[in-house]
Image 1 (tube, each protein chain N blue to C red):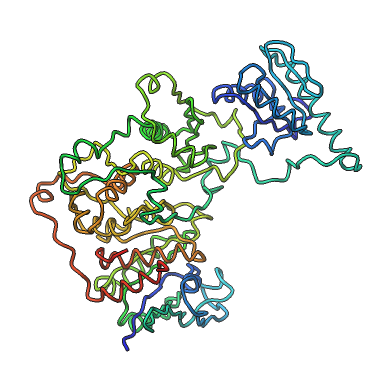
Image 2: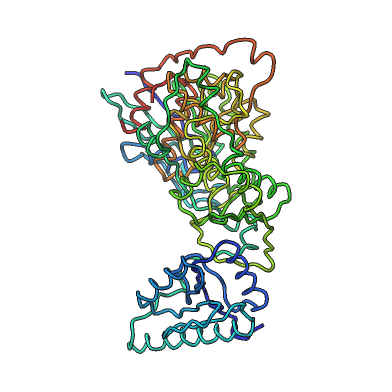
Amino acid sequence: MMENNKRPLKVALHGMNGRTIKTMMLFLQGPCEGAANVVVNAEDADVDVFDGDSPGSKNLLEQHIQKKNLKPVIVFSLQDFVQEGVLSLIKPIKTSDMLKVLELAKTMVAEHSKKAVDGAIPPMPQTGTEEPRLQLDESEKPGLKTAKHQTAMRLDEKSFNEFIGVIEDIDAKSPKQFINDAHYNPKDYYQGFIQSALAIAQEKGQVLLLESDWWPITLFPRTQEVWLEASDVELKGFAGIQLNRKTKTADLFLTPVDPETLGIGGALDKFQSMDAFLWKLACWTSRGRYPHDIDFKLPIYLKNWPNFTRLVITPHALRISALLIQGPRTMTNVAQALNIKPQYVFVFVSAAYAVGLVGQARRAEDVLVQAPDIEPSKGKRLLGRIMSKLRGN
Amino acid sequence: MSQYKIIFTGPVGAGKTTAINSISDVPPIKTDASASDMAKARKAATTVAMDYGIMNLEGGEKIHLYGTPGQERFDFMWDILVTGGIGLILLLDNTRADPFTDMRFFLDAFKKFIAETNVAIGVTQMDRSNKPTIADYHAQLQVSDLKPPVFAVDARAKDDISLLVQSLLYSLDPGLAE
């Protein structure tokens, strides 16, 4: 191992897809013997690395150079890339060349730091003392860390429509609409792939990386977490896209991640609990529809209350839970009993079904008798006023 | 005027005092003293009588928030405390040696009150210890034939405690309007 790998360089990769990033991680950890680690946030890096050939990357590189960033820049290119202050490497990259250029970059970083101490130039951003970075093998040790605490986001009907996007109105008394327009198949969306991948990760008890044309996502079955760099806005946009058959089979890769050989830099705030992630993903995929595996004519049951303090709370979700936990009902019946739009029941059912909390009641007795009306409590007025106080109305 | 109460219970250090503080409209009245028995290992000071807070409702009505003393030697007070109570909030500390035993103990101690009203369970300290999980608590509850809300809560977070109390109220009457 290189003697000076006690503090490996931190490199940010720009303009590379998920598979290239993975290859680079393996290359740096394997043949390059850990001379550098890949970090997710560019501001945490000592060095910026660009692919000089792809059009998107060229633009990024030009913008980066114009900013006159003080960090060393390495460019991989099929041809000689000549630019003042830029270190270049010809593709295909040889290990010895990579190590040499990393040594040069390390010297540049050290010289820059020395000049900064002397006051000759402004200091570069510190990279050694920021938020803790995660190593994959450590993350799977129970109790070492947990996903960043996220308090529930509660949505009223107006903010919910902004959160979900425009949803078609569905007439509660029109079963034909329920059949034709109000259901969706999660397998046609990103949600389906994530659920399949999670099931495999759980079954194998293995950390898995799901790669596609979109952001890669890492699944941690033991800690029940996922790591995804994409923002919620990006996730919401992607969740609603129906993926075609070709994409499903050709462009998605699920690969095991070996904690012994692969260490990635990952911001802790990018970790999310699996349930919270799947819950919101299902909300954005559903957009007011119910999963097509559920027969709307049959009752559904709620296995137990969702952990609402850590989930997106859709409109009327607490009331729906309180009602369904008492016994099975059809989705139509829930909407009628609570006097709410069916879409609010559908989106709740979609999210709860995705995390395994809702199921179809198939016992003869569940179908035989219509669910009873809600019995008003004796202190309804008082409870309503307490509720109003708690909700700040 | 009637005395309406919500009761907060749970073992020593589960966050009852903090939870009441989170939603009380007045600084809660505490009756802490130096811990002198088994509580000493977990807290320097502990509640030896009860905590008390108030939620002021529109129209001048008040909801009294009572926290039971965590130590079992004060359990003679619990029956008196729950009289006229609307429902029970049970807080459990996930870092304790056996939180399931704690849960069973308190559910059993307040069995009659729960049967007459309802209960919602908040699990604290899950950021420090994520095992057992919320699903594990639900699995344990299956034998008790109860299906209460069980939420991970930070007792300092008003939103968490508010949601827990709301779930208790909806459990009592799902027909309550939002």
